[in-house]
Length: 627
Ligand code: ADP
Image (cartoon, rainbow, N blue to C red; front, side, top):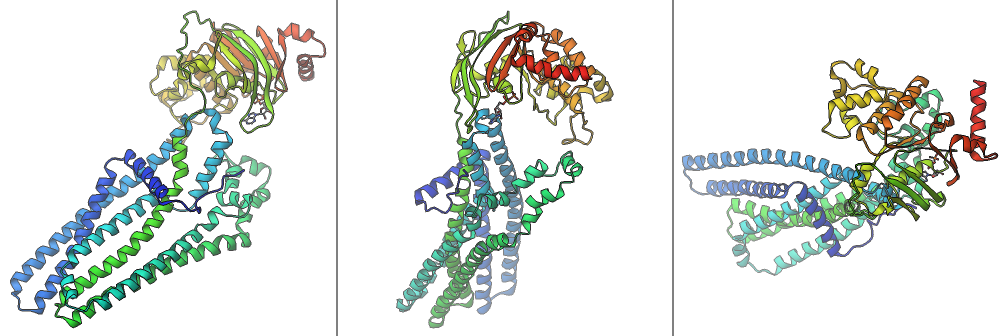
């Protein structure tokens, strides 16, 4: 079920203000000087533009009367120089602000990524987070994200400052009006206000319409289309990445890919639907804004000219006051429309704010892990039941198992029987729904998470290496012990390849994301690096999920030959499909449909006739014999 956007629901003003405050607080926390710099820029730009208006009015008033040319000329030159200087300073300031805006937007993105990186792993594929991400994607579909909040917020302040400036400059105008019969003036002003009110109501109506398509696309499929999920699915990433798309070529699957990508773009009905209503909305907003602009300006000039005709207003003042009044009216329109846009822009960020404020759900214990020099850790799974978030099926059912440091445990079983799940639970990537996992008799939830995770070195089946330096990958840290990195690489069978890397050696970058000189490695080499990383950590438990699947037979033999040495007095848990490579383990646990169905040594298990192990073994033995 996809999270529906709530953007078009009416919200009380208090909540709008709350949203704006939350976004502004976040912006300030990302860059303390951003708001003050903007305030200076707004003030300076108002002073300069009103300064220009006052200078022109002064010159026109003087020209209309008797004046000394040289003196006026000097003043004009001084004024123009000051104004030009002001504009230059403002441009420098605005460049600074623009760069800051860009940095804030990047930091904002980094904050979201950091949050995702640090949150409980179990939350990442939880329906709750998926719904939230869905909402964020929809709500930020169009527009410039947090930038829109800056622009609208700045627009509101700019207009307010200009209104205040115009009121201050226009104060002497009141004495002209006071000489007049004020009745007609009030009538015109009231009319203008009424017009403003109606205009803004219409603006709001069109504003909602312009957001229509993003949030009320008729079917989930159309939503997916909007978000180009299919591109992710077809190419592995929204951005082009080399290495993707091999399968498309080999299987000639362009047509089916196009069905879900390009062909959807040809869907005229969808285009019409997506374009018409928001198009009318956009047109409506611009139309209303222009109409209000023209009417305000005409009204303002009309009022001042009428007043001037009846009295004796100098021409320069006439223009100045007309400009002031027009400015007040026009900026009033801008203030309100920008406020509406600001509310909408801040509202669109609420999903992201909620993401940033999500608190972890897993219980984080405070018990320090008992640091044992003898590394005597016992692990016990006691009647553990576990379902993945959002899944109906148990991935592990009533699972109980004990093992202790120094043992070699192999886990075998068909695909999907729960082997990897057991490893994930042991590492506390997820918590069991029922039952408990104990380390030396203490429920693992009670331990401090950071200390507990130091117990395990894991090579997952879908391990990831990063586009960083080789040494940083192995140490998983920015500080590393070069000698130790080299030793671990040698133990994992990467020595020969390391020599080929030349001078840079362990400082070579993996992949080409950061540098063109980055090295590309084969699947088997990558697996060796993942194993080297696990060795480097020197944790008491080494967990290997299909550790040799991508290795060639010689490398595999080397790893197994070395492994007793590498694992030393540590506990090693292997998951393997190749039963022949599990024979050397002290204990073998056989999984079937989420349950532990057998445990024992190879010989014991083979002796259990009709058991899962014997059937798996016999099935594989056939291949070996055939080979
Ligand atoms: P194995 O390692 O034995 O091949 P797993 O432990 O990976 O099996 O998976 C056990 C079951 O849990 C499978 O049926 C699999 O489809 C399901 N499963 C694995 N990961 C997830 C997940 N993230 N969300 C939902 N179900 C999952």
